[in-house]
Image (tube, rainbow, N blue to C red; front, side, top):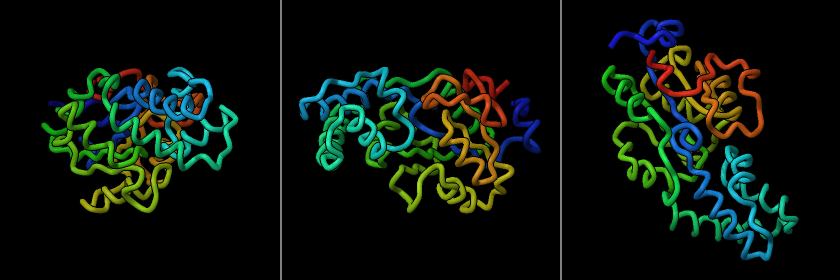
Length: 226
């Protein structure tokens, strides 16, 4: 396969490493996340937030998600620990009930594998959920690293998870790529010195992705292979 135009513009051939976000980039997981959020809200006697509202909260990690839901429902923040417990139990039991894979994820990963590009999964999702979700979609073997939000001392937007992977294979940051859907991914890439491509269909937290200065803003992962 010839080097796609984005990669030939950024690198001398294919990237030395690609880091991929999970939620909002590879999978649409909001239906199940929203159900788990609503589980603790309803248990606390609050109204359900619903999928549309939760979609705007996702992206900063599950602890922040709980905080946003509690604040929205005007529930005492002291209930965070209990809410988080209910959330985790419910989410683990219904992890992939309504979660779906976005188009062309498998085609992109196949292209990377075919061209010998190491690929890392870097998400702020608790690590306990990462492998089961990837196993369900038969994607686990495509990744050389699976880093959840609690795997290292720091998570995105810190550069640490990205550099943890690049340094382990002695890849130069300027020859590496982060693919995500939010300002969190953009900041992580920027902090690490990686190139950055952002997808428009994910969880952008209301931020105009086009204004961030990412190297590419795309509507479909397949655009990276053209």
